[in-house]
Length: 429
Image (cartoon, rainbow, N blue to C red; front, side):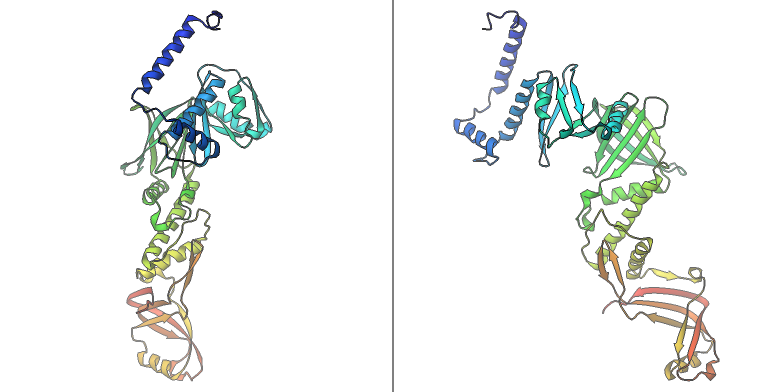
């Protein structure tokens, strides 16, 4: 049949087939041929997903077979298959210009994202149930699966973004990280998208083709820490350091490299996203203190990306750590006025105040119940609080010599020379 149809099966085409066959034969040299039993086992595994025996090349062969089968439907495309996180993915790239007709239901839901694909090269996904195509049996076959997603991407190249931080006052520069990612091409801008720190930190930048400012953003994927012990959060200190610096006003400098050559560099105006950076820095600060509390009390706390807390709760956490470390020591500058309290006169306390008179002394108060705080939605019972006022005197609203048992007396503490205040927990002995 081939010899008879010389108009279609040209000499050039036959030579190309011959070349490909010889190339396949050379690639197979030295490789063990699978036995008949292996072929049978591979077929059984492909059909029911349950292996009868271990075959080292099974996964690779299955992907190769799928790719060749799909490419056979339309040779104008290269197909690459993968299986990640329970999902089968096919990457389809055209070898030449291909005309396709794509009909999208509910187009208004995708209109803005489609415009961003054209203008900035930003990828977006469409629910397969909203797509119908014609013009390629390959595309039609893949889009028949209504449970999948169709992701449209522009042309891209692999690049490296180098990020550093610079203090705008001292001009001290601190190299941070290399972010490996892709640069996508749109009609109006280039878009960089990449990850670092095991995909915890996502970096995105948009470079307009004409003189507008570059848009730069960093995003922490807190879901990757979900459920982990706060003491075991990977890359926590590095990520916290970055956001602390940004919130302190350090500038973000970056450059893009392709094959080792720099071709774009710039300075990020972080004031645009300053509120977002502050929110992230606050959560990281709260988490850092939770880590300290976990270490001091030897308790386990799990990180939750859904955590919400008030400024008072954050302040209570900070204060609890200071009390455990016995770091709360103040002088008179820490008070607008010293506390006053009401005393029920009895023989013991009246005698004590009469003996002290206007002498300088020390005064202490202890809470009756243990303090409780909530950290990452876990209620933690701490210890009673002791407040010590050192080097104080007393002012009474009544003459101390005329006080009777049972009288209510208002006592005002007055700071004297070398006054200090100490606040700590009463720890069990």
